[in-house]
Image (cartoon, rainbow, N blue to C red; front, side):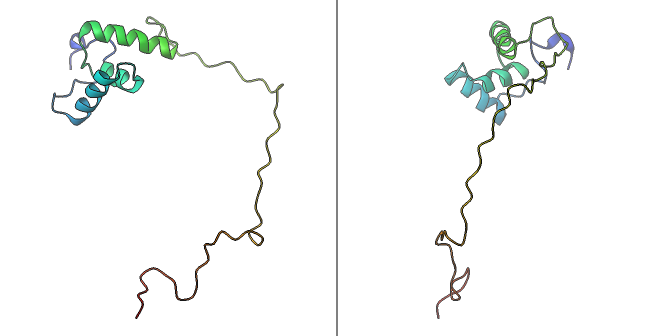
Length: 115
């Protein structure tokens, strides 16, 4: 696939119109244009028009906090350990005191037929 044929934000070759993934994501995008999943797939596979792809690609970059010209990824600032929270203790039921009613008798079982 030649670079000059790619639309803005396109990373993969455009699938044929009958492709199952394409049908799913195009339909999802038509029904819910705000669907992040549909937006990202449609831009990445170049199924939107040039104008629509540019608009949606800009929304995706804004959502991800990236600038158009920026290709370097920045790591998030390190978390401080000053504000530690107490972990909530889990309540464990004593299985001797609590009967969930899941006991099996001697004549019960999978595949056992009454004769």
